Image (cartoon, rainbow, N blue to C red; front, top):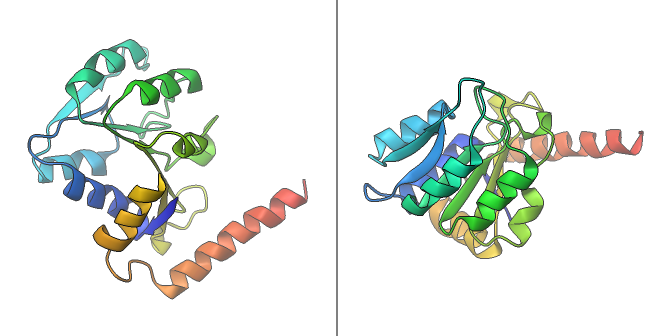
Length: 188
């Protein structure tokens, strides 16, 4: 259920270039992660962007209402650049109610109150994207990963992904970084 890529940007780009088209509508927030927005423009993928309110909040009801008009739901959780995050129960409700592909970008997830990683076990349409760039401080390493259902992961890694997407040095560095976390957790 875990796939890797040359940074989370590459993962997002491959998802868009292979699962979306000019007829696909993506539901997201405004603002949202700039790279994702630019990739949608590059591929002529229409965005349905729900703006933040004056008090910098997002209305979950607007998202649920607009979800009927969209094929893909993309949310960065917490949002980049605002840091806003839906209440966990609200986001779970939105994910469960959405029938299309759901991409939750948790690039800043380690700085948030919760993660939706465990939902990927039961939600066949959910892809949770994470990276070592932010919380690990390893942006130059270019190691992103996602958690999704087994079928999507196998398709991504065996069909969509480049034959050698991540270098051996990157893989070993990622293993070391995750090992340090595991070691630090034991000490608390």
